[in-house]
Amino acid sequence: MTQKFTVLFDLDGTLVDTAPDLMLAHNHVMKKFGYPTKSLDELKNTVGQGAGAMIGRSIWSQAKKELTSINEKVKNEMTDEFISYYGNNILNESTLMPGVKDFLNWCKKENISMAVCTNKTEHLAVDLLKKIGIYDYFEYVAGYNTFDYCKPDPRHITTIIEILDGSINKSIMIGDSESDANAAKAAEIPMILLEDGYTEKKIDEIYHNHLIKDFVGIEKIVSKYL
Image 1 (cartoon, rainbow, N blue to C red):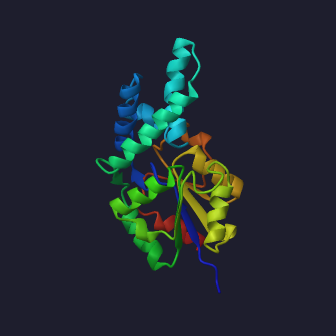
Image 2: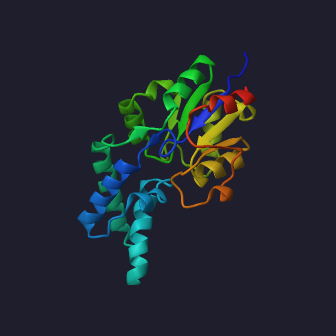
């Protein structure tokens, strides 16, 4: 049997613009625990590593100002609160990136295997994909807690490909940050990078083979690899 081509997608900032709802949940937690809130642009830079890292970076910036250390117990309580609040408000303002639905339909027509590789908690990723109406396109969804490792560890990518009976030589990653790019580079697969991603890095600091504004017309890039 011929191996199918595999497309791996990041979720936040790639398939879905989740920043508005992440900001609401983040700032809810910050207010509740007495920390400063963040703007949308400030928050985008902290999304790619998962909820714990996002909360950690927010309270670390305040701890540095006050010359104090982070209380891990409080950080964990804040992270739990974030996941709980966000889980109940996961699709208030989040929207699909332009062209996503058309590209997913094209992949399906071309018999391409599709999977999500995200540093979002798995149950939240699945819930969001279902509520926004694209869950059924994917053969597998792996969050930061699905395996014992996550991006930028390349095994987050390679394990998914193995589960799908795919091949490293017939796979590509689509993402918006250095977590996606570093994992793709280490896994030795091509990387399609979205501009204006959830990262503080500049485009020329992030590994990529192709740069796109959104998913409109991305079929022309992927078809070259088929």
